[in-house]
Amino acid sequence: MSRASLILLAMLGSAATLGGAFAFQYFGGLLPCHLCLIERWPHAAAVIIGLLALILGGRLLPWLGALAAASDVGLGIYHTGVERAWWPGPSSCTGSIPDATVSASDALAKILAAPVVRCDQPAWIFLHISMASWNAVVSALLLFIWIAAATRDR
Image (cartoon, rainbow, N blue to C red; front, side, top):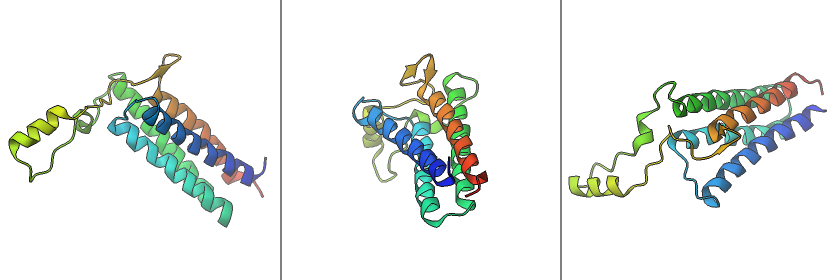
């Protein structure tokens, strides 16, 4: 497989992963937690890096794509650990802090009315593997594709 084909495959893999996340959110009604939202950013970066790599060429951009995928592997593993209570998650997974200009009673009402999407409770599981864990697996596969693209001769 050529370097361009590998870059395209990795880029489309990240685009499909993002598309799946948005489909679960907007069509499946599964609201993302704070960590889920963070896990989307490296995929978005990988899509942009892939486009630039296809246009500009070179070896640096595929390595940056590999870095984006590697960061998502780490985020997916971290999120999986939070879900399985191996370590605590960020405090942001329990709700958000309201605007400081809001009165205390209004702030309390907003807090009580806001849906809290917890990072430590998987929203979706397939084959006993949560969405965060699947993200880590897919990102690891994409990492290997990016590395193959970076090390492939034209």
